[in-house]
Each structure stands twice: as structure tokens, then as C-alpha cells.
Amino acid sequence: MAKVFYNFNGAAFALAAAWLMPAADVSAQSSTSSPSVVELFTSQGCSSCPPADKLLGELATKPGIIAMSFPVTYWDYLGWKDTLARPENTARQRGYAAKAAEGEVYTPQVFVNGLKGCVGSNRSDIEAAVHSTGSALQKSIVAVAVRRDGKKLLIEAGAAPEGSKLRNAKVWVASVLRNADVPIGGGENAGRKVTYTNVVHSLIEAGDWEGAAASYSVPVDGSKLQDGDMFVVFLQAEHLGAIVGAARISG
Image (cartoon, rainbow, N blue to C red; front, side, top):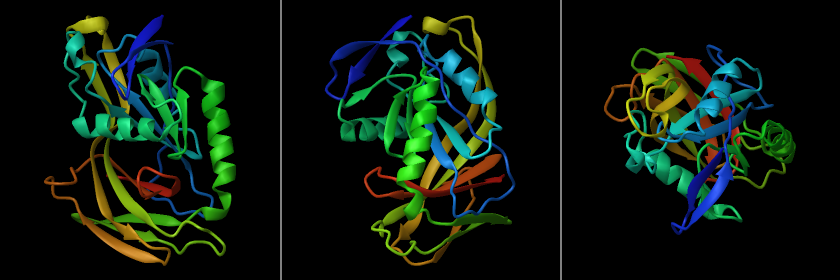
């Protein structure tokens, strides 16, 4: 089914329906071959999104991928206000789109490792993006580790590999809700109950990374970073650039 969406300037376009990609589950992770980060932008008000949300759940245990769902707000006018959406998610998607050649936002839309946008329904394109961006970033990967100490997350980011040009990034921490079953009472998906997987319900900056090994302590107090049942830490070049390191931990 075709789906109407808007570019960054608000013009209407049509796009085919789509699916999406997942995240796995480990208690803590640190590796010089960082998992790929796959971000899904989705909406309860979009009839094309449930297949993507379902696929995200099916792929959530695959190794080598950390996937997160970012519900967005711009379809709320269709008759149902997304109960999981955050304006910050919408702004994040638009920031990615503004950097992309086509500059379009739509749902469901995927961004892989901060570098490559894909239509969520095209599994082969997503897999190709995971491979191509992973290869492109291979010499820039930074080891990231995270552990929990009471009401704090303790994060370690390694030094930039020798020869890497990426020396400035932000350390981000996402609090993630692994599963949410949502009965939808209006809009294009009225009457459906949709399961959402790895939903980001808060995302904060832990600090700057400047190429040298560094440590960070992030309070989990419910004010800025909510106490989720999973946390994802990722190192992303500024201005929504390449993601060169990531780890996750159970909440």
C-alpha cells in the first residue's frame, strides 16, 4: 500500500509500505568490532508501519545489530495520537533527513550506523547498508563498555584507532523499553494491537569524546534518563554523523 509522507520542507510524496530491523540482548558488551546500530522511525498512526514493527521484534535477537525504535509524532493528525512518540524522535529523524541527499522523512524509515537511510520494507537494502557502513567504519571503531552500579551507569569509551580521522563525538545513552503492546483506538490502524520492540523512551548525552580513552558516569534517576529495562550506549560523531561504537546492558 502506498504511503504519503513529507519531505523536510513539508511537500507530500508517496512511498510503498515497509518493514524494519532489530536489536539483540546481552548483559554488557565491549568490542573492537562494534555492533551495527539500526534506528527505526515509526508511528502508530501509519498503516505501513506494523509490518516494520513486527520485523523489528523478529530480528531483535540477531547478533551484531543493536536496533532501536523511535516513534515519531507527525502522523498524529490522522486521528490517533501515538502513545509512545516523542518530539525529540521526530527532530532526530528530520536531522538525519536534512543531511541525506533526498532530504525526506517518512515512516517506516531506517538509518544504519548514522550513515545510510533505507526504506524499512527493503530488507536487502538494510542488510546491504549494515555491511557497507560496517566496512566503511571498520578502521574507526571505538571500543565501548557499560555496566550498572546501583543508580548509575558507568561507561568506558576507548581511544580512537591509529590513523582514524574521527576524533570528536558525543556519547549517547538511550533508555529502552523492550516490549510495549499498544491497542490502537483510532486512525489508520484503528482496532489493531501492535507490539513495539526496543522503544527509546529517553535519550541523553553522557558527554564529549575527543579521541582519547574516557570514562563517564550517568545517573539513572528518572529525571533525565529514565530507568528502562535496557540501556544502549553509542558513540556518534557530532551533527548526527557516523556511529563508531555501541554497547548495551540490561536495565
